[in-house]
Image (cartoon, rainbow, N blue to C red):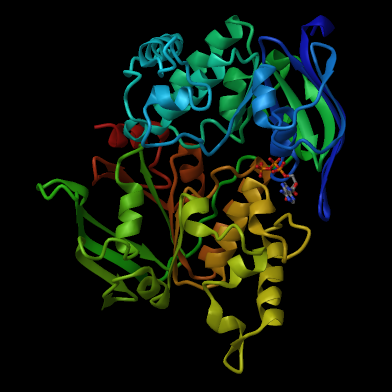
Length: 505
Ligand SMILES: Nc1ncnc2c1ncn2[C@@H]1O[C@H](COP(=O)(O)OP(=O)(O)OP(=O)(O)O)[C@@H](O)[C@H]1O
């Protein structure tokens, strides 16, 4: 690629946190009007680098050059003024304000009388949304938007400042397939407008769809780029990330199945509207010891609601029966569920799974208090010992068990949630999107882990929206659509076509 097309350059960037060198002498170039993809395993330093480029971290060694001139940002606002905007994984909008109010927050237009000029602001917002093919009225409250639309509002906000470099950190992790298509169209049109995109994602197939080039980070170091995308394949990309070939074609071995460990019978969850509408509508299924059961469904099919319901989160509304080891059990709360031998690794790790301000070891041990008591008191040595076992087993990248969870990379946070539930030694483990945000190598590790847990006699239920994943790791797959079960396939019978046909009603 032509050197004169370099819009932004990071030169010899080093960033240290207590005990960790997140970036070590990293230099990268960002090309104008291209999708520049940063790849690397969990904890490689991708997000840290993006935060430096966008002014979130003002302290680092090295230089940033924008159009060849050195720049230094003290905060994201300054970076935004220079045309560099970041769209974080967790969107930053205020739900009870309108789209316009969010876009203009802190930079409102006032008319000659000193009054807020709503008409003008709504007009510009409408034009910005139109550039993104979004025809939602600008006065709509953000709380009424789907996640994909909220993301479009974030992009519109960046466009208002005339962003020339747009950083997207895992933008497709929480949006539907249809919204991903819209996002990709938006990216294509931004490229035509000479906007550069810096893009992070662990979904390799999606990367090949939109990338113009790859930049590899490994253990905080820049390890190379792939410029000739046409000739590159998935194995080249994995080699760039991991530094070696890995077996990327995991298929679960068949292992003998034991007795039924879990059965849900006639489960209903009414919508809170009170009408006879259901979020879970007459769902029954069972799982045997040693079995991995997959639940596939498109967004809104009722998968997460089903898991929550059998886990006691909606006990007041739920109808139906649950049996563990053949015995009927009453589950009124998460505590009941855990006490009866159930574990749930939730979809949204930050809201439901972790206490971010607490250290790694506390997060791992907190659902298994009885294992870390000595003479009736919590014992620090036992807590740390328990955590160390999982840090090793799941290869969690942390300088110490005492590190606060919020300081871990996203993928490593996910491994901490998984550890927390494994430590409860459940009989049946429910995993909701267990590999979201997890790198290709760690994904494989988690697949093997799930398979080993099943071999040890655990029943495992996996909810995933990634078809190849669910087909590779499950013995049997149930498909949900519109809150009901719409299909069931053994691993042998399952094909992508059959599953999708059952999922789309
Ligand atoms: N605020 C912080 N304090 C201490 N360490 C941190 C902090 N932020 C990041 N780190 C560490 O820096 C390293 C790089 O983290 P970073 O979040 O940049 O990785 P990543 O490549 O984005 O990973 P992922 O794919 O899992 O999101 C990790 O070891 C992480 O634990």
